[in-house]
Length: 320
Image 1 (tube, one colour):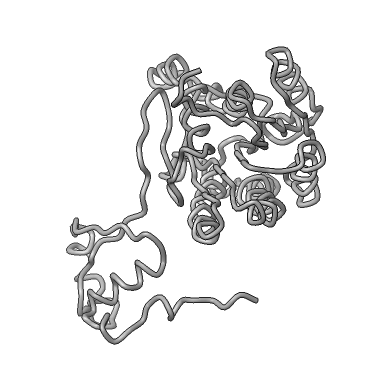
Image 2 (cartoon, rainbow, N blue to C red):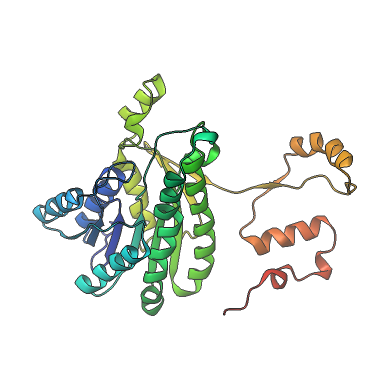
């Protein structure tokens, strides 16, 4: 073991979707680096049906066979009660919770807008942004008390848009908002929250139509690459906060929200907006807000009124 090796000795990590794919690779990696790992996976099919729990138990058996410590949690994380129970299982077994990697998601069949299933949409929302918030809420007071915590939440490159994928993209895009807000709240308590947008060979990508791209992805995008990136984001060595990192095949990239400076002094009429739209769409003077306060201040400067405003105060919300 080298002096600069990233370790997790004494840390307790909860990995959702930990029984297969990226979650499995991450669970094994964290355990090999000394973490006590709660492998949370109901064992359900991609559409959420047929939970049997065998995947989580299999990974725990592999962790233990390699000398590590693991615990299987097989509840359905699409419910608030089960998310609370997952955190409680870590606390009961190991006395603390240091890290959460939330990879679990359903992946229903692609459907056009007029055929979207309400059941699928609700399931995706519950297992993605809602479960992320439920897990964070139950872990938060413990992380605040110990003044340390790491959360990594899985988004998706699907947020850029693809046919038939509106339900999945909506759930994964919501993750980015969760990351940005929780990162601000956790910063004062030693808690960092980041996102990952993974590309890897998983059950989801194995369903892709057989094309040159899908064959290349399946051949080159091993889940271990994403696991390595997620492990870094979960470690003490990582000071990043509020970022979403694209990971896949050995490539690491930063995903950012941007806004153009825009066209000013447009009259309040549909016709004026229409006339300004070509210049608006051609504007490449981009800025990258750190948060909503930063965005408000930048917009105020464009209106040349920033000296008259305290933009951060205008959006502040008093606790309670």
